[in-house]
Amino acid sequence: MKRFIVFLLSLFFQLLDIQAQNIQDLEKSYVFLLPINYEKDSINHHANLLVVTFLEDSTAYSGMNHSAWFLVDSLAGNRLLGASFLPETKFPISVYDVKISTDNQFLAVFQVAEGHPYIEIIDVRKLINAQYEIVHFLNPYPGSIEIVNWENNLLIVESDMPLTDLNNTDALDYQKQMEEFKKYSYDPRTKKYTIYNK
Image 1 (cartoon, one colour):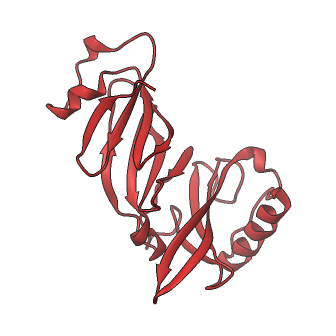
Image 2 (cartoon, helix red, strand yellow):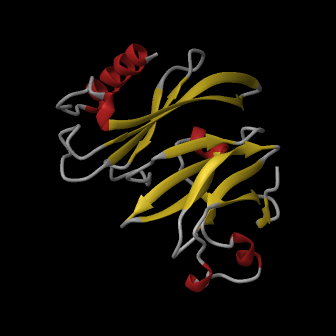
């Protein structure tokens, strides 16, 4: 699998005319390959989503991280969906985890900006059309948050803040930050958190 990803990235780098300093050193990158199913022109596609965060010294775009998003589809062809270093696309700079929902409708994207972790939930159908559209923003400030997985189309997360408070308010009280992480489920349809007890 690693050789396949390296080969694919090399092809995309040639296409984008990006000079990689060390394309084979994937330890300097966060790489995610997710199976994804979607329908286009009444045809069901079984493809893969490849998301890569290149760290500061892994490409010619040194000085900051960058992410690139690719659709790997043997039926419709491989293509670049977007990248943070392309001015015409609005894709995030640093992606550290991604998980797709059970029904392939949503993608949870874990990011960190200025030391602050948060999760964006985006629309997969828009992503297939090269649009990064945020439909939910999970912000645990001043605490932390991590993606666990999707379960029955609910996003399971861990946080050291009482996320259920966000059902009634827009901001969390820093005095309620906990010493240990607790699990919560988030329903994108109701926009509500519940404590996860399983």
